[in-house]
Length: 301
Ligand SMILES: NC(=O)c1ccc[n+]([C@@H]2O[C@H](COP(=O)([O-])OP(=O)(O)OC[C@H]3O[C@@H](n4cnc5c(N)ncnc54)[C@H](OP(=O)(O)O)[C@@H]3O)[C@@H](O)[C@H]2O)c1
Image (spheres, rainbow, N blue to C red):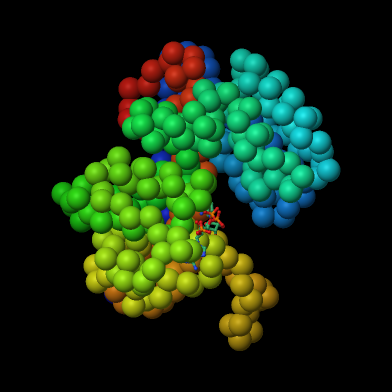
């Protein structure tokens, strides 16, 4: 049976380190970093994420500012707000909650964020630095995947030389995850909707990252014996459990029950990658503040 990777616990550890770093910055410089989050519209899932981000940012001792704009806001108003936050000396990180309404060009909006404050790591500058292997702010969810994969290794083992298969090639998850696992010296394969023999490709993975958005698509038999499985997918499906309190439930892209019979370790959904995304966001906010304000912290984040 596979070990279940406790994303909540790993994320709590990282948030504790962030909290310690923030109090060190307060003592040394009298300064606490601030994260600004922009939410457009009333999407219930996005509202939950923004509330969690606010809660955990405050808990870490940082400043948290939320800007809520109506669903029908015009693109220029959103861009103007980002430009104001870019020049606000007290704001260290800017995050635009995705997805944006369809009348807004997401790439154009993200492109306005000052790369020094790009704590979601999604601007072209951040993506370019990642692909060139230069230091920079890394996208939070893929960074969380790497941390969880490392946490599942046996003592003394490393990711170096392992074959990492990433199913999904989105700008948000799949592509940056590929570069991040490459930075760890993995041999990386990116699979997508046109990949042939996907089951065989998955079976060749020591580390299997699923970022597709299709409930339970990766079958148990697609998992190599002893692999580490990182399930990024968050899919809401009908809850057919008899006498279930809720009509729907969240599942990942991997058939979790079946995969536990093959994997050495696997992340659950919920409670796996999800909590890491916020923890990595908090870390990025501290790193962005340190870089921009020329502050140093002694401990490694
Ligand atoms: N845990 C978190 O914090 C977090 C954060 C972000 C996203 N997510 C979740 O992660 C999942 C993926 O998100 P995303 O933004 O990357 O999604 P996305 O932009 O829709 O990308 C999905 C990717 O999956 C590939 N794909 C679709 N069907 C496939 C199939 N049958 N076989 C192989 N590949 C297939 C697509 O290939 P093509 O490129 O060929 O179309 C695409 O590259 C979603 O469930 C999302 O909710 C979770």
